[in-house]
Image 1 (spheres, rainbow, N blue to C red):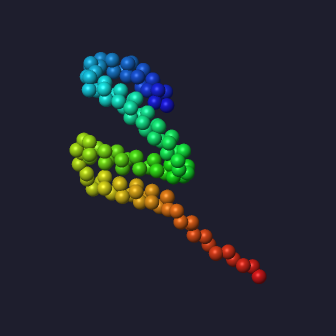
Image 2: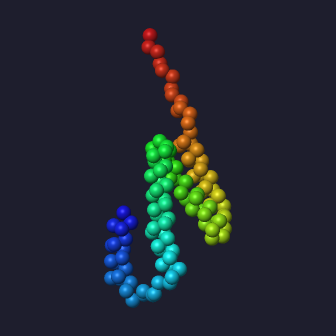
Image 3: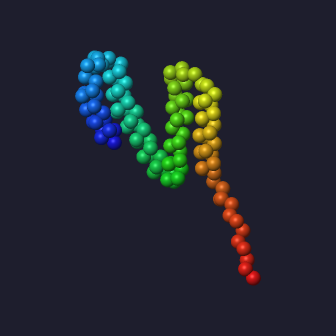
Length: 115
């Protein structure tokens, strides 16, 4: 999917942005290689393991926690600030996950007896 989306973007960049290109720094190239090979492969491996280990409903809904992990990682690794928006968003996301993964049976209306 990334390759299929990346080829048209690369083509457009070559056609439209050729006069703005600059040499790529070593840090940027290493970051790109890390993202492509290490992080992407690790994430796909972890996702496939998760799908095999838990029910489909749990694995699909649990992917909603990705933004929370991203915000926490940004705070930890990059020193990004934690604002009320991130806190509110995290509370809403985790609340939605708690509701979606609630193990209790949904309540049913009592059956009506005819007679």
